Image (cartoon, rainbow, N blue to C red; front, side, top):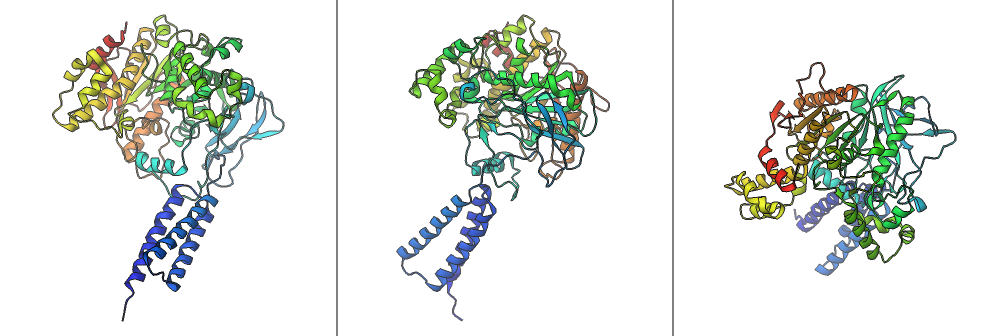
Length: 593
């Protein structure tokens, strides 16, 4: 029997191509009709080629071009729509009882197991749009009827990528992508983003400790609904958790002389921090309605959110709004903060350059520009500044004078903080010393002597340690000493646990600390889940009374001496700070007093 090998080859190739294109639809979150149309297109194309076998290279090429053009049409027609993110993912969730706050009545939804109540998208300020762009946040408007707080508000204005990029990041960075037809949409982005979310234990509760969380993202990106730091885990330990959207990038940190002049407080540049303070004020005034104690608030944050926490610890405007602080993987308490911070002169200069780039001469003209035109300026406008109002001086200067708001501090960093930032960095024996010279100048030789290297792997590891120390470890070392010198009980940690997901990379500790490791995830072992239970237990205890220690937990000693810290990894217990010799050099380089 004669076999038509060309026909078989075509069929195999068509199936292969169709599978790839199906994967693209899935990664890009296209709607279900896209998959149906792709199947129909592949079947139709296969039948046409079987009935009319095109001869010659050109005809075959044209047929495939037609195929891919039709696929492009399917991709466009079934593009994922913008849709609000639901507070819970299971169908037909049960509503909570109605709660009254100053602006009106609202209700949320129960978690699937009924143990936690979630209230999403509660406005804590007026939308900062039109004339309110770059103004201090205003009181929210009251509403009529019952507000259904069942979906998260849009993420704050930021540059967004195609959905497929987010999916690939989950695969490459997090290793936990899950195929689903329930996420075929894009999350909304808007200037109108000043809303907060609340997780509380279900039922009638009172006087519970409250954690207010500030998300990270370099003050350029991020959203409050990310599962790793959702409040579900802590709420199950009788802690109420609140987080919020706040203005990012150019909308949150642009500085201009005219804006300072039009402000009754002569402030500019710290609108994102002012939003966070406004959210804390809303919590003070309303959290008792949810069963929280407004006099027992812990302010927490990760990455740029932690930088904000360390800034608000010395802001006079935040005095009395929280009693303790939790900071993960960033601080601006050092002499010269390495990121997310600049002085006002630099901020104003950068603001003037922005106006020149957009060919405008006034704030009024800038306010008239659409948000989509300005959002790309986030890279140049994402820094906390000393504005004379939110911050009257640098946090370092305030701590030296004994000015601080937190009564206890829990903070720390991860053993491989630098990994995502050096993901595409090519460090080897030939160039690692040059990198050190670039960053440390006259102190480079001293630092290089601390890290003897014989192989490219040694060099890459040394540079990763130094980079991580410059941006994360050393600022926490400074914050720890500031706390100790001000007689603030302080507890510092090092997270070093490896797993099948992020491990001890930047932000890898959050899913442990907030008690949110998914029950069905194979990326975590029994040891990971036990560590998470322990870490979230420390967090809950700290939120209750300022001491992380509790029944069944290994002792976490105060680290005010700044020479030891608590390790959370395969080893759990107090260890000596690994990079003290490097930190002593950095003290001299930065002029620590």
